[in-house]
Length: 443
Image (cartoon, rainbow, N blue to C red; front, side, top):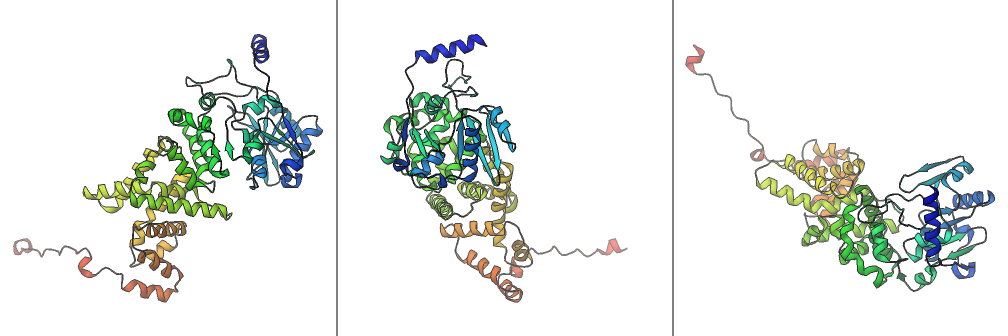
Protein backbone atom coordinates (compact mmCIF):
# COMPACT_ATOMS: atom_id res chain seq x y z
CA UNK A 1 0.00 0.00 0.00
CA UNK A 2 2.86 2.39 0.90
CA UNK A 3 4.75 1.50 -2.29
CA UNK A 4 1.61 2.22 -4.33
CA UNK A 5 1.25 5.62 -2.62
CA UNK A 6 4.90 6.48 -3.25
CA UNK A 7 4.64 5.55 -6.94
CA UNK A 8 1.60 7.80 -7.28
CA UNK A 9 3.32 10.73 -5.53
CA UNK A 10 6.50 10.47 -7.62
CA UNK A 11 4.47 10.04 -10.83
CA UNK A 12 2.57 13.26 -10.14
CA UNK A 13 5.78 15.16 -9.44
CA UNK A 14 7.19 14.04 -12.78
CA UNK A 15 4.24 15.26 -14.80
CA UNK A 16 3.81 18.79 -16.05
CA UNK A 17 2.02 21.23 -13.72
CA UNK A 18 -1.76 21.12 -13.78
CA UNK A 19 -3.79 24.03 -15.09
CA UNK A 20 -4.61 26.79 -12.63
CA UNK A 21 -8.11 28.11 -12.40
CA UNK A 22 -9.23 31.45 -13.71
CA UNK A 23 -11.61 32.77 -11.04
CA UNK A 24 -14.47 34.51 -12.85
CA UNK A 25 -16.72 36.96 -10.98
CA UNK A 26 -20.48 37.25 -11.41
CA UNK A 27 -20.10 39.91 -14.09
CA UNK A 28 -18.29 37.47 -16.41
CA UNK A 29 -20.54 34.41 -16.08
CA UNK A 30 -23.91 35.81 -15.01
CA UNK A 31 -24.89 33.02 -12.57
CA UNK A 32 -26.58 34.34 -9.43
CA UNK A 33 -26.91 32.03 -6.44
CA UNK A 34 -30.72 32.24 -6.73
CA UNK A 35 -30.40 30.36 -10.05
CA UNK A 36 -29.02 27.32 -8.18
CA UNK A 37 -31.55 24.91 -6.71
CA UNK A 38 -32.11 25.31 -2.94
CA UNK A 39 -31.03 21.72 -2.36
CA UNK A 40 -27.70 22.19 -4.16
CA UNK A 41 -27.05 25.42 -2.23
CA UNK A 42 -27.84 23.61 1.02
CA UNK A 43 -25.42 20.78 0.20
CA UNK A 44 -22.63 23.21 -0.70
CA UNK A 45 -23.11 25.29 2.45
CA UNK A 46 -23.30 22.16 4.63
CA UNK A 47 -19.99 20.87 3.29
CA UNK A 48 -18.31 24.27 3.51
CA UNK A 49 -19.47 24.75 7.11
CA UNK A 50 -17.89 21.38 7.90
CA UNK A 51 -14.55 22.67 6.57
CA UNK A 52 -14.62 21.18 3.07
CA UNK A 53 -14.59 22.69 -0.40
CA UNK A 54 -17.82 22.31 -2.37
CA UNK A 55 -18.95 23.52 -5.80
CA UNK A 56 -21.85 23.09 -8.18
CA UNK A 57 -20.07 21.48 -11.09
CA UNK A 58 -20.30 20.42 -14.71
CA UNK A 59 -23.47 20.47 -16.76
CA UNK A 60 -25.52 22.77 -14.53
CA UNK A 61 -22.86 25.50 -14.63
CA UNK A 62 -22.39 25.03 -18.38
CA UNK A 63 -26.13 25.24 -19.08
CA UNK A 64 -26.67 28.31 -16.90
CA UNK A 65 -23.90 30.19 -18.72
CA UNK A 66 -25.51 29.11 -22.02
CA UNK A 67 -28.88 30.36 -20.68
CA UNK A 68 -30.41 26.88 -20.56
CA UNK A 69 -32.39 25.66 -17.55
CA UNK A 70 -30.46 22.73 -16.00
CA UNK A 71 -32.32 19.48 -15.39
CA UNK A 72 -30.29 18.72 -12.27
CA UNK A 73 -27.45 20.04 -10.13
CA UNK A 74 -24.34 18.04 -9.20
CA UNK A 75 -21.84 18.94 -6.47
CA UNK A 76 -18.11 18.17 -6.31
CA UNK A 77 -16.14 18.28 -3.06
CA UNK A 78 -12.87 17.22 -1.42
CA UNK A 79 -14.85 15.33 1.23
CA UNK A 80 -14.79 11.54 0.84
CA UNK A 81 -18.09 9.66 0.35
CA UNK A 82 -17.98 8.52 3.98
CA UNK A 83 -17.48 12.11 5.19
CA UNK A 84 -20.36 13.34 3.02
CA UNK A 85 -22.54 10.53 4.34
CA UNK A 86 -21.68 11.55 7.92
CA UNK A 87 -22.66 15.21 7.33
CA UNK A 88 -26.05 14.56 5.69
CA UNK A 89 -28.48 12.25 7.45
CA UNK A 90 -30.64 11.68 4.36
CA UNK A 91 -27.94 10.34 2.08
CA UNK A 92 -26.57 7.09 0.73
CA UNK A 93 -23.37 5.93 -1.00
CA UNK A 94 -23.96 4.29 -4.38
CA UNK A 95 -21.82 2.85 -7.18
CA UNK A 96 -18.84 0.54 -7.39
CA UNK A 97 -16.85 1.70 -10.41
CA UNK A 98 -17.44 5.33 -9.43
CA UNK A 99 -18.57 5.82 -5.82
CA UNK A 100 -20.76 8.86 -5.24
CA UNK A 101 -23.29 10.03 -2.65
CA UNK A 102 -26.95 10.82 -3.22
CA UNK A 103 -28.11 13.51 -0.80
CA UNK A 104 -31.88 13.81 -0.52
CA UNK A 105 -33.37 17.22 0.26
CA UNK A 106 -37.13 17.50 -0.09
CA UNK A 107 -38.12 16.25 -3.57
CA UNK A 108 -34.58 16.76 -4.92
CA UNK A 109 -31.65 14.36 -4.98
CA UNK A 110 -28.21 15.95 -5.32
CA UNK A 111 -25.37 13.82 -6.65
CA UNK A 112 -22.17 14.53 -4.72
CA UNK A 113 -18.83 13.28 -6.05
CA UNK A 114 -15.36 13.48 -4.52
CA UNK A 115 -12.54 15.10 -6.52
CA UNK A 116 -10.88 12.36 -8.58
CA UNK A 117 -7.14 11.88 -9.02
CA UNK A 118 -5.45 11.53 -12.40
CA UNK A 119 -5.24 8.07 -13.93
CA UNK A 120 -1.86 6.35 -13.84
CA UNK A 121 -0.29 2.93 -14.26
CA UNK A 122 -2.19 1.69 -11.20
CA UNK A 123 -5.59 2.56 -12.65
CA UNK A 124 -7.64 -0.57 -13.31
CA UNK A 125 -8.54 -0.81 -17.02
CA UNK A 126 -9.59 -3.47 -19.52
CA UNK A 127 -7.50 -4.57 -22.50
CA UNK A 128 -8.82 -1.64 -24.57
CA UNK A 129 -7.95 1.02 -21.98
CA UNK A 130 -11.48 1.55 -20.59
CA UNK A 131 -11.34 2.51 -16.90
CA UNK A 132 -13.04 -0.15 -14.79
CA UNK A 133 -12.66 1.31 -11.30
CA UNK A 134 -12.19 4.96 -10.39
CA UNK A 135 -12.19 5.67 -6.66
CA UNK A 136 -8.85 7.39 -6.01
CA UNK A 137 -9.35 10.85 -4.55
CA UNK A 138 -7.36 13.91 -5.66
CA UNK A 139 -7.36 17.70 -5.83
CA UNK A 140 -9.73 20.04 -7.63
CA UNK A 141 -7.01 20.67 -10.24
CA UNK A 142 -6.77 16.94 -10.94
CA UNK A 143 -10.54 16.61 -10.97
CA UNK A 144 -10.84 19.39 -13.54
CA UNK A 145 -8.24 17.73 -15.75
CA UNK A 146 -10.15 14.46 -15.46
CA UNK A 147 -13.34 16.07 -16.86
CA UNK A 148 -14.15 15.19 -20.46
CA UNK A 149 -14.75 18.55 -22.18
CA UNK A 150 -13.61 22.06 -21.31
CA UNK A 151 -17.20 23.29 -20.99
CA UNK A 152 -17.75 20.72 -18.22
CA UNK A 153 -14.67 21.70 -16.17
CA UNK A 154 -16.47 24.61 -14.50
CA UNK A 155 -16.91 24.90 -10.72
CA UNK A 156 -19.42 27.37 -9.24
CA UNK A 157 -19.32 28.48 -5.60
CA UNK A 158 -22.80 29.70 -4.52
CA UNK A 159 -21.30 31.46 -1.49
CA UNK A 160 -18.96 33.75 -3.45
CA UNK A 161 -20.84 33.58 -6.78
CA UNK A 162 -17.57 32.86 -8.60
CA UNK A 163 -16.71 30.27 -11.26
CA UNK A 164 -13.39 28.47 -11.30
CA UNK A 165 -12.53 27.81 -14.95
CA UNK A 166 -9.52 25.52 -15.40
CA UNK A 167 -9.52 24.91 -19.16
CA UNK A 168 -11.08 28.02 -20.75
CA UNK A 169 -14.51 26.42 -20.85
CA UNK A 170 -16.38 29.73 -20.71
CA UNK A 171 -14.40 31.03 -23.69
CA UNK A 172 -15.14 27.83 -25.63
CA UNK A 173 -18.84 28.24 -24.89
CA UNK A 174 -18.79 31.79 -26.22
CA UNK A 175 -16.86 30.63 -29.29
CA UNK A 176 -19.34 27.73 -29.76
CA UNK A 177 -16.60 25.09 -29.66
CA UNK A 178 -16.63 21.67 -28.00
CA UNK A 179 -13.09 20.68 -27.10
CA UNK A 180 -11.71 17.65 -25.31
CA UNK A 181 -9.41 18.04 -22.30
CA UNK A 182 -6.22 16.11 -23.01
CA UNK A 183 -5.51 13.69 -25.85
CA UNK A 184 -8.83 12.60 -27.45
CA UNK A 185 -7.51 9.12 -28.33
CA UNK A 186 -6.63 8.45 -24.70
CA UNK A 187 -9.83 9.96 -23.34
CA UNK A 188 -12.04 7.94 -25.70
CA UNK A 189 -10.23 4.75 -24.72
CA UNK A 190 -10.78 5.54 -21.04
CA UNK A 191 -14.52 5.93 -21.67
CA UNK A 192 -15.91 5.32 -25.20
CA UNK A 193 -19.26 6.83 -24.18
CA UNK A 194 -17.54 10.22 -24.44
CA UNK A 195 -17.92 9.91 -28.22
CA UNK A 196 -21.70 9.81 -27.83
CA UNK A 197 -21.63 12.58 -25.26
CA UNK A 198 -19.71 14.80 -27.67
CA UNK A 199 -22.46 14.44 -30.27
CA UNK A 200 -25.22 15.05 -27.73
CA UNK A 201 -23.63 18.14 -26.19
CA UNK A 202 -22.76 19.64 -29.57
CA UNK A 203 -26.38 19.23 -30.71
CA UNK A 204 -27.84 20.53 -27.45
CA UNK A 205 -25.61 23.60 -27.18
CA UNK A 206 -25.26 24.32 -30.89
CA UNK A 207 -21.49 23.80 -30.75
CA UNK A 208 -19.02 22.74 -33.41
CA UNK A 209 -16.87 19.80 -32.34
CA UNK A 210 -13.21 20.79 -32.47
CA UNK A 211 -11.49 18.91 -35.36
CA UNK A 212 -8.90 17.39 -33.02
CA UNK A 213 -11.75 16.12 -30.82
CA UNK A 214 -13.87 14.92 -33.75
CA UNK A 215 -11.26 13.21 -35.93
CA UNK A 216 -10.70 10.02 -33.83
CA UNK A 217 -14.42 9.30 -33.36
CA UNK A 218 -15.06 7.42 -36.60
CA UNK A 219 -11.91 5.28 -36.31
CA UNK A 220 -12.56 4.49 -32.62
CA UNK A 221 -16.31 3.87 -32.87
CA UNK A 222 -15.69 0.14 -32.46
CA UNK A 223 -14.78 0.71 -28.80
CA UNK A 224 -18.49 1.11 -28.09
CA UNK A 225 -18.71 -2.67 -28.49
CA UNK A 226 -17.00 -2.96 -25.08
CA UNK A 227 -19.38 -0.66 -23.20
CA UNK A 228 -21.95 -2.43 -20.97
CA UNK A 229 -25.32 -2.45 -22.72
CA UNK A 230 -27.13 -0.89 -19.76
CA UNK A 231 -24.83 2.14 -19.80
CA UNK A 232 -25.14 2.41 -23.57
CA UNK A 233 -28.93 2.40 -23.27
CA UNK A 234 -28.84 5.17 -20.63
CA UNK A 235 -26.68 7.36 -22.86
CA UNK A 236 -28.88 6.70 -25.89
CA UNK A 237 -31.95 7.62 -23.87
CA UNK A 238 -30.34 10.90 -22.78
CA UNK A 239 -29.56 11.68 -26.41
CA UNK A 240 -33.10 10.95 -27.62
CA UNK A 241 -34.70 12.86 -24.73
CA UNK A 242 -32.42 15.89 -25.01
CA UNK A 243 -34.89 17.97 -27.03
CA UNK A 244 -32.43 17.82 -29.94
CA UNK A 245 -32.89 14.21 -31.04
CA UNK A 246 -33.20 15.07 -34.73
CA UNK A 247 -29.94 17.00 -34.80
CA UNK A 248 -28.24 14.41 -32.57
CA UNK A 249 -29.12 11.46 -34.78
CA UNK A 250 -28.03 13.28 -37.92
CA UNK A 251 -24.69 14.06 -36.28
CA UNK A 252 -24.52 10.51 -34.99
CA UNK A 253 -24.82 9.23 -38.53
CA UNK A 254 -22.32 11.78 -39.82
CA UNK A 255 -19.78 10.65 -37.22
CA UNK A 256 -20.36 6.98 -38.08
CA UNK A 257 -21.63 6.06 -34.63
CA UNK A 258 -25.20 4.96 -35.29
CA UNK A 259 -24.33 1.34 -36.08
CA UNK A 260 -22.85 0.98 -32.60
CA UNK A 261 -26.09 2.10 -30.97
CA UNK A 262 -29.02 0.84 -32.98
CA UNK A 263 -27.86 -1.76 -35.48
CA UNK A 264 -31.23 -1.52 -37.24
CA UNK A 265 -31.36 2.26 -37.41
CA UNK A 266 -29.27 2.52 -40.57
CA UNK A 267 -31.55 0.02 -42.31
CA UNK A 268 -34.64 1.93 -41.17
CA UNK A 269 -33.32 5.25 -42.43
CA UNK A 270 -32.61 3.78 -45.86
CA UNK A 271 -36.31 3.06 -46.35
CA UNK A 272 -38.09 6.19 -47.66
CA UNK A 273 -41.26 5.45 -45.73
CA UNK A 274 -39.42 4.35 -42.60
CA UNK A 275 -37.20 7.41 -42.67
CA UNK A 276 -40.16 9.78 -42.74
CA UNK A 277 -41.78 7.90 -39.86
CA UNK A 278 -38.62 8.10 -37.72
CA UNK A 279 -38.04 11.80 -38.31
CA UNK A 280 -41.69 12.65 -37.59
CA UNK A 281 -41.46 10.74 -34.32
CA UNK A 282 -38.23 12.49 -33.31
CA UNK A 283 -39.56 15.93 -34.24
CA UNK A 284 -42.65 15.23 -32.12
CA UNK A 285 -40.43 14.17 -29.21
CA UNK A 286 -38.24 17.27 -29.52
CA UNK A 287 -41.33 19.50 -29.53
CA UNK A 288 -42.67 17.89 -26.36
CA UNK A 289 -39.34 18.17 -24.54
CA UNK A 290 -38.94 21.85 -25.45
CA UNK A 291 -42.50 22.52 -24.32
CA UNK A 292 -41.74 20.94 -20.95
CA UNK A 293 -44.06 17.96 -21.56
CA UNK A 294 -43.35 14.40 -20.51
CA UNK A 295 -42.17 11.84 -23.04
CA UNK A 296 -42.35 8.06 -23.04
CA UNK A 297 -39.12 6.15 -23.69
CA UNK A 298 -41.24 3.15 -24.68
CA UNK A 299 -43.10 5.16 -27.32
CA UNK A 300 -39.85 6.61 -28.63
CA UNK A 301 -38.11 3.26 -29.09
CA UNK A 302 -41.30 1.77 -30.50
CA UNK A 303 -41.16 4.35 -33.31
CA UNK A 304 -37.46 3.78 -34.01
CA UNK A 305 -37.88 0.03 -34.39
CA UNK A 306 -41.30 -0.14 -36.01
CA UNK A 307 -39.93 -0.29 -39.57
CA UNK A 308 -38.16 -3.55 -38.83
CA UNK A 309 -41.26 -5.01 -37.18
CA UNK A 310 -43.24 -4.32 -40.35
CA UNK A 311 -40.58 -5.90 -42.58
CA UNK A 312 -40.46 -9.08 -40.50
CA UNK A 313 -44.24 -9.16 -40.05
CA UNK A 314 -44.87 -9.01 -43.80
CA UNK A 315 -42.22 -11.66 -44.45
CA UNK A 316 -43.85 -14.04 -42.00
CA UNK A 317 -47.31 -13.48 -43.50
CA UNK A 318 -45.94 -14.25 -46.95
CA UNK A 319 -44.69 -17.54 -45.54
CA UNK A 320 -48.25 -18.43 -44.58
CA UNK A 321 -48.30 -17.46 -40.89
CA UNK A 322 -51.50 -15.99 -39.44
CA UNK A 323 -51.46 -12.26 -38.74
CA UNK A 324 -51.52 -12.24 -34.93
CA UNK A 325 -48.78 -14.84 -34.27
CA UNK A 326 -46.75 -13.33 -37.12
CA UNK A 327 -46.91 -9.90 -35.47
CA UNK A 328 -45.84 -11.19 -32.06
CA UNK A 329 -43.01 -13.23 -33.56
CA UNK A 330 -41.77 -10.17 -35.50
CA UNK A 331 -41.88 -8.09 -32.33
CA UNK A 332 -39.86 -10.67 -30.40
CA UNK A 333 -37.28 -10.90 -33.19
CA UNK A 334 -36.70 -7.15 -33.26
CA UNK A 335 -36.44 -6.73 -29.48
CA UNK A 336 -34.08 -9.72 -29.27
CA UNK A 337 -31.77 -8.23 -31.89
CA UNK A 338 -31.65 -4.94 -29.97
CA UNK A 339 -30.95 -6.67 -26.65
CA UNK A 340 -27.48 -7.52 -27.94
CA UNK A 341 -26.57 -3.82 -27.90
CA UNK A 342 -29.05 -1.96 -25.74
CA UNK A 343 -30.19 -3.20 -22.33
CA UNK A 344 -33.77 -2.04 -22.76
CA UNK A 345 -35.39 -2.41 -19.35
CA UNK A 346 -38.28 -4.81 -18.93
CA UNK A 347 -40.69 -1.98 -18.19
CA UNK A 348 -39.78 -0.08 -21.35
CA UNK A 349 -39.80 -3.28 -23.42
CA UNK A 350 -43.28 -4.01 -22.09
CA UNK A 351 -44.45 -0.52 -23.14
CA UNK A 352 -42.97 -1.03 -26.61
CA UNK A 353 -44.69 -4.41 -26.98
CA UNK A 354 -48.08 -3.07 -25.88
CA UNK A 355 -47.96 -0.18 -28.35
CA UNK A 356 -47.04 -2.51 -31.22
CA UNK A 357 -49.61 -5.15 -30.24
CA UNK A 358 -52.42 -2.58 -30.29
CA UNK A 359 -51.85 -1.65 -33.94
CA UNK A 360 -53.63 -4.66 -35.55
CA UNK A 361 -56.52 -4.19 -33.11
CA UNK A 362 -57.27 -0.76 -34.57
CA UNK A 363 -58.30 -2.55 -37.77
CA UNK A 364 -61.23 -4.22 -35.98
CA UNK A 365 -64.13 -1.80 -36.01
CA UNK A 366 -67.03 -4.15 -35.41
CA UNK A 367 -68.66 -5.96 -32.51
CA UNK A 368 -67.32 -5.39 -29.00
CA UNK A 369 -63.67 -5.07 -30.06
CA UNK A 370 -63.62 -1.22 -30.36
CA UNK A 371 -65.21 -0.81 -26.94
CA UNK A 372 -62.68 -3.15 -25.35
CA UNK A 373 -59.83 -1.33 -27.06
CA UNK A 374 -60.94 2.02 -25.62
CA UNK A 375 -60.61 0.55 -22.12
CA UNK A 376 -56.96 -0.41 -22.64
CA UNK A 377 -54.54 1.59 -20.43
CA UNK A 378 -52.22 2.15 -23.41
CA UNK A 379 -54.97 3.18 -25.82
CA UNK A 380 -53.82 6.81 -26.05
CA UNK A 381 -50.21 5.82 -26.74
CA UNK A 382 -51.38 3.29 -29.31
CA UNK A 383 -53.63 5.86 -30.97
CA UNK A 384 -50.81 8.45 -31.11
CA UNK A 385 -48.64 5.79 -32.74
CA UNK A 386 -51.43 5.07 -35.24
CA UNK A 387 -51.76 8.77 -36.06
CA UNK A 388 -48.01 8.95 -36.63
CA UNK A 389 -48.20 6.03 -39.05
CA UNK A 390 -50.86 7.90 -41.02
CA UNK A 391 -48.83 11.12 -41.05
CA UNK A 392 -45.86 9.25 -42.53
CA UNK A 393 -48.03 7.77 -45.29
CA UNK A 394 -47.86 4.17 -44.07
CA UNK A 395 -51.66 3.93 -43.68
CA UNK A 396 -54.66 5.99 -44.76
CA UNK A 397 -55.66 8.83 -42.43
CA UNK A 398 -59.23 7.54 -42.50
CA UNK A 399 -58.43 4.94 -39.82
CA UNK A 400 -57.14 7.29 -37.08
CA UNK A 401 -59.86 9.79 -38.02
CA UNK A 402 -62.48 7.09 -37.42
CA UNK A 403 -60.99 6.24 -34.03
CA UNK A 404 -60.83 9.89 -33.06
CA UNK A 405 -64.54 10.28 -33.83
CA UNK A 406 -65.39 6.97 -32.14
CA UNK A 407 -63.53 7.85 -28.93
CA UNK A 408 -65.32 11.21 -28.65
CA UNK A 409 -68.84 9.97 -29.53
CA UNK A 410 -71.57 8.90 -27.12
CA UNK A 411 -72.71 5.30 -26.82
CA UNK A 412 -75.55 5.54 -29.36
CA UNK A 413 -73.33 7.24 -31.93
CA UNK A 414 -70.67 4.59 -31.44
CA UNK A 415 -73.19 1.84 -32.10
CA UNK A 416 -74.20 3.57 -35.35
CA UNK A 417 -70.56 3.83 -36.43
CA UNK A 418 -70.10 0.08 -36.06
CA UNK A 419 -72.85 -0.91 -38.49
CA UNK A 420 -71.11 0.06 -41.72
CA UNK A 421 -67.86 -1.51 -40.59
CA UNK A 422 -69.20 -4.98 -39.79
CA UNK A 423 -67.82 -7.68 -42.06
CA UNK A 424 -70.38 -8.96 -44.51
CA UNK A 425 -71.69 -12.50 -44.20
CA UNK A 426 -69.60 -13.49 -47.19
CA UNK A 427 -66.46 -12.47 -45.33
CA UNK A 428 -67.27 -14.35 -42.19
CA UNK A 429 -65.93 -17.82 -41.65
CA UNK A 430 -68.68 -20.27 -42.58
CA UNK A 431 -69.33 -23.22 -40.36
CA UNK A 432 -69.09 -26.60 -41.97
CA UNK A 433 -72.64 -28.10 -42.13
CA UNK A 434 -73.19 -31.13 -39.97
CA UNK A 435 -73.48 -34.35 -41.92
CA UNK A 436 -76.77 -36.16 -41.59
CA UNK A 437 -76.54 -39.72 -40.35
CA UNK A 438 -76.77 -42.35 -43.06
CA UNK A 439 -79.53 -44.91 -43.18
CA UNK A 440 -77.17 -47.71 -42.20
CA UNK A 441 -76.02 -45.75 -39.19
CA UNK A 442 -79.64 -45.18 -38.10
CA UNK A 443 -80.27 -48.86 -38.34
